[in-house]
Length: 495
Image (cartoon, rainbow, N blue to C red; front, side):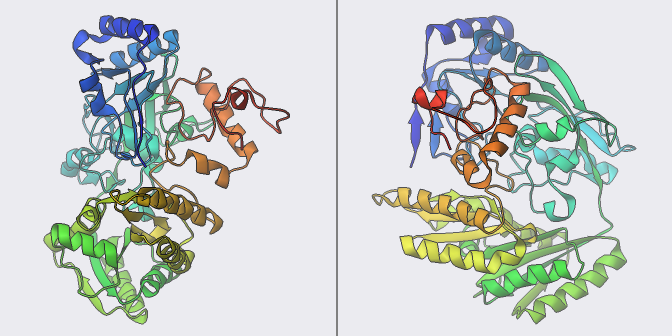
């Protein structure tokens, strides 16, 4: 169900808009209703809020000035990059400022000797590898949206990608960050060295979803391009055999660069969209990629083939060259958008489970969907159990959108009860914040909130995200007695 909130234009926001125009330039401050509506949602279009003010920053100073003026006025702000997020993390505040960073796109020269590069937050993910390629280097995190997603957003959500099984998530590839705190102060977290003493504030900032401040520069770790890469496409007649293959590969001591899985519905969508030529009649396919030294890759590839055959794979294809490899990945990379070919509407979810539980969780998801008369297409990072179920529905059918939303939430709870998490790489944002209490205790949430309040005591940085209630920065953590002040004001529910 789509929730829409209109902008709240008050004397306070009107005065702030004038101060912002003086600080960053008239042409960079938008308040016209038709212009600001462009930014009313991110990649999750089910929630829409029209911001009162949009600032199109073009420099670090613009970010500093905007954040400082918001702090002085007590007006909330939300930072936004390319807007490709899928959890409502960049959803604006109706009475606040949306700080757009997509124009901060400077890439500094690649430091090949130290295998690192510094970029501004609006730089597109794939541009980093493009610039590093002449030095035989690459940037490992590769979300499916890497053609359009920005590094700042990747850092905010701790994005992963197909190759995170072997190389890790964004947090493993960021060395340092220049950050504008919610009061406008500029600080540096981490640096250019691999390790730093003291508390890992950089690690806390990555994945904090814009609630601790705004990054204006990021120093990224680059990896050496592997000597050899081999990719295999494997077709199965059952989801159980495909899932079992994944566990068998890891149990054999093999760590692939990627192991991706798609079920029949996802395959159908990909074929309709990009004609990827996956095995006909497959109930599930795996895209398996190994990389590393040539001798090691060749030996492990033979082992993987044997494991797949032992799990009843009926067709195995090995990419002969880069063109065939690209075609194998094309179906997987296009899957999210391709689902629009087989369903008018759909929810994209993101949860994590132990990979050994893939067969039973996928079976339970199908049972839950059948019970509601809905379909779920599955395309996900099978190697580390990061699920991306797509709940298909038709919003023209009365009540079906609500049923789909309920099913998407139930799937997240299934992930938690199976020993997993409500998110792997899409973040919590607006969509999943009420599910945080399903995974964490009140004490856990209070501890997280204390860290947030250390960075942002006034709660103006991306408010209403991550936490299930607008908890107060000044309150003491622990077991509460009596009515919570937020509950008394009618602003939220206490878990």
